[in-house]
Picture 1 (cartoon, rainbow, N blue to C red):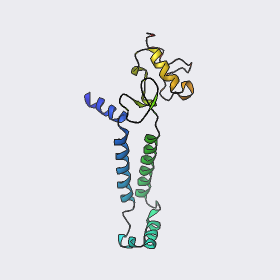
Picture 2: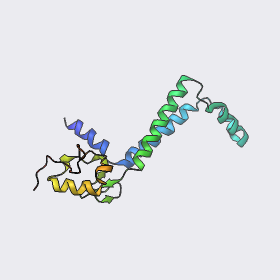
Picture 3: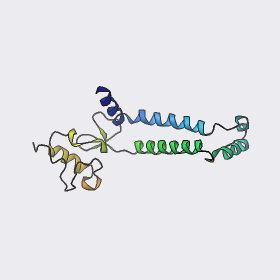
Picture 4: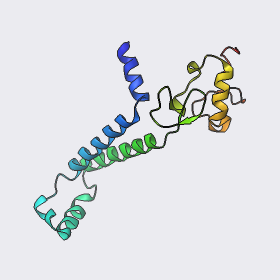
Length: 149
């Protein structure tokens, strides 16, 4: 059980580590995609252009799979980069700020009372930007099951 909690915390945790892993995987996949390049031809600009042109099209099933994986990782990296982080009061804060996390990672269980959740909900954009579904029925009241005090 502790392992599952550790994994869940990692998935919600430090985005710099995840971005680094994504970049490393993209580099590895890029080298794998271009493994047919004749590196001896890469010593001149014209040779490099020709090698890249000859090897860049996804002409095999392997290259299509690698291209799909690289696209997915690029999208994931972009998503990580543009997340808005918030503290428990709903204020926007810098990525990696202690006791803060991306807006969509906040759930009703993160708040002790409904007014705390409501304040966060309103600062995070209310009904129109409720990416974390604090207001399941979209009536403008967040986390209705939490105590009022």
